[in-house]
Length: 257
Image: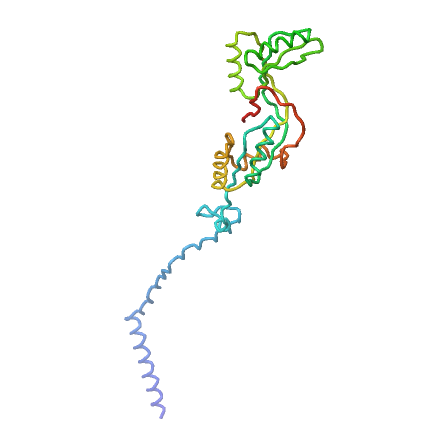
């Protein structure tokens, strides 16, 4: 009975020795190398562009709000030339008003160039000046008596505001063979111009052509901005005031600008 356990232990020891011998002959299998994970690097997310301010130009060069707004038409004005004789201004004003035009008057004082022609002589006696005046009238000239100062009399042959008429009169005086005196100076006097409400250019051009057909000399067509810079502060009236005024000699009462 004691022999059986002993034999069992011998068998177990032999099996253990055999397993150890197998381990010494067969080394353990190495673990496989770790796999390399190649995850793609994400692209950088662009930062959001700052919001565009309303007054900044867009990429197309236009503002969204402005592109929706209707374009404002550019306004134009028609202005007549300058008048320096009130009666002539009054007559033209009546002509324009009778035609149904919404005419306005620009009345102000300006420096105007005056061309003055006189007899070259001065007289201490009025009778001598009257004789000289008659001599000029006999030659076909308009002549009037003047008082240059308290001690003398003179003969005026023309007071003109337009250079073209002054040249014509000067040529006539030179051909007369009589002596005369010419003086050019600036005088600060009332002037009148006529204008109309501002309109888009096609309507202003139509009005400009109509004035030409009515015989209005050389009306001017200009942008409203230019008109405001030239006449914006000038008082506008419904028409020249009706006051008595002495008529200048030798016509040419109107002057252009």
